[in-house]
Length: 152
Image 1 (spheres, rainbow, N blue to C red):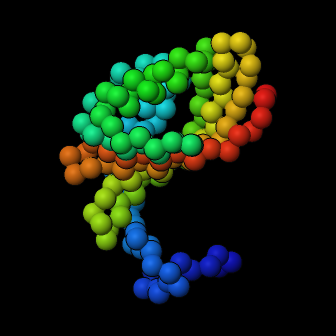
Image 2 (image 1 turned 30 degrees about the vertical axis):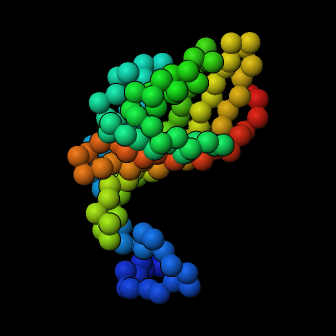
């Protein structure tokens, strides 16, 4: 075969790695929750996903970090979303994972967000997010990384 074999042997890294490479495919229902949250954001229905979050949540967004309550996080997100008349996200990939060495469930998602503000200006960004689910199956952490794409 022309494809290279994947090695699962233990490796040693030049620097410490907090999560190692010991991941497995995670819970697809958690990936479904994250995709639904993206759709709720587009549709400006953020309260639909409220129960997916833990009481305390950490959000790392471009230029800011929030350690707050679920309700405050949703209020801040709603305030941001209200700046736009239109939001359309396209999911390019979603990957539920489980970090075996920590027993943590994560979902990684990649996509494109196109938005129109109240003045009619359009913009788009590429997005990569990682979401962590706690032991109760609730989201307690999210980090977002964006790459602006310029006006459409």
